[in-house]
Image (cartoon, rainbow over all chains, first blue to last red; front, side, top):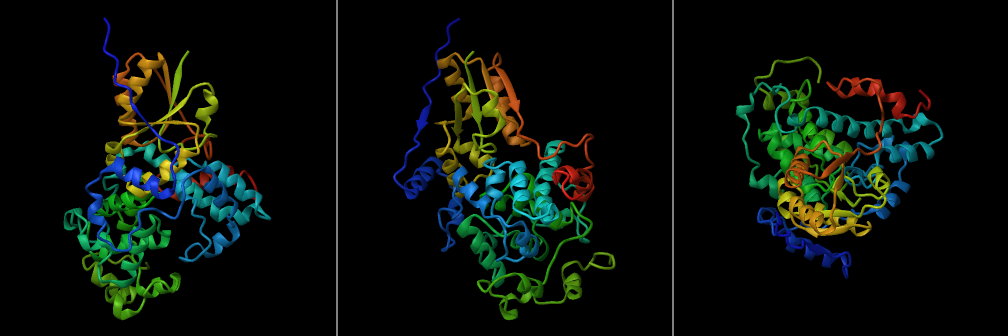
Length: 283
Length: 144
């Protein structure tokens, strides 16, 4: 029996006059109503400074310094590689990044910390393949003294807009909205603030990050949120203002008056954030 | 035999093993705004993905993969579609939708080059249990 042929699908172009023209084209293809809410952040740009494509990826790969990475990667101005978006989208394979790293060091041990971070990505992907449902459900119970029901389901508007009133957190969120990228340490700070200071379910924050980050991978992103929340770790991750001040550069306001909820000792924060949690000795 | 390489957003390079596994098959990408929303792919990331596509020898079509691939299969008498493998349930659901629309199509998933190839399945309970098992391989046996 003859069937009617399907309509010819519309072919999309390869040529654009400029990056702005491509941005306009994508916005018109997207017509996403839910992005409008986030647009209220005045600093938000429409594009990430991280350019897609293999050429840009290889240029970034050519810049990596595994020795400096190991020494400074926890600092916001440290020698991080910004390869994550390329790896997440298969523009670079983990193996080729590893092989290149081994060629630019004097001894393999100098690249070990960097390669271990690549292995985290491989680990998350294996976990994802073996238990895909773990991505959106609590792997374990919260170890915060609260149950999942004690956490709010939805991300508050002030967080999505970067207007929480906590200066360093708003600074980090501004970077995220501006660039589609955030240093890993800042991701942990924001995640801990959302889950532990505001008592929002990690899923709400994880979905928001997925939508905003150009490198977000459901496995790495969500399981890292679960690690912060303590549903995939033995205790909650939290921090204080003194720690933030140690790792961020001059662009972030770390004055105590502008960051009051974070300006405490770890002991005091433990009591404030987790009043029902059984003490486990050291943090 | 006519075939297609169906590229998705997790395999945006021409050195992916899928390309060498079928060098005569043209590559296509299906740009589906509804899928992007379901997969939480915002506009900045959409731009990044499109920029990656611009450097590839690939045909970009607008619409759900199921509809695009069905139309191309009919027009070109395609008998085989190969696609980069993925752990993503959202992408796997797309694969299932295509297979359901094209039940007689040969459909093959091609994995990327592995980072490590442990002889036994590693314990994934915590990262360091996995790392201790794969460390030598991950380091290419250098200095360990």
